[in-house]
Image (tube, rainbow, N blue to C red; front, side):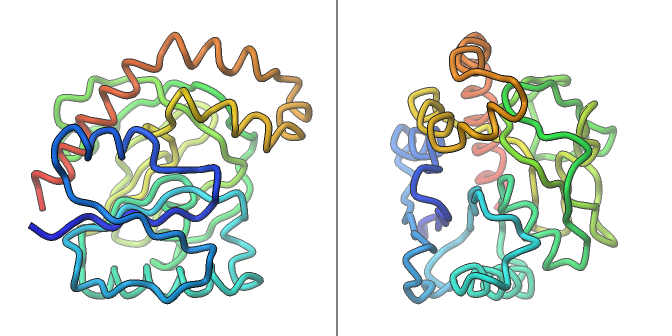
Length: 230
């Protein structure tokens, strides 16, 4: 079996519990750090791609060489219909590639929020054995519109478009993969956003800690579903 390609677009936003799942289940993977501006690997060497978050807005992707390269790479993934899971920024850039707009959400979602599957989401194999509603970690100010021909899979109170699918490509807005051991790094790196919303690192961690084991279990289930349907 070919390995999964995991694209990391920011030094502190790693694959988190995705790597835990791969290690526990013997899933071969390669982490590619796009921000080093290396040449992207040959898609033929992988059977699926997981694209992670990035603090830079998709709206500004043309201002950064590595994000221009990433955009072209995702466009090629879509063209060949390679299985793709885009998380937060990874979902937003997928939406952009598919012709949908990406822009500021009505509020920034930072912390743990409840998400509900749509009827189509309940039917989608990606969410098999994941109960709705569920909790997930978030850290984003932007949101994606649903591309033409794609299906809305999940929604929430403060950000309506939380997940969509088009063919073998899925974009999700939330972070199932955020490891509790790494969230403090996010809080320190993006502390200005916490202050802007009147939130504290301690509160973010307290609430996520209460939900982490369930979020991690859901991430493992989603990955099992993603891999088993390839």
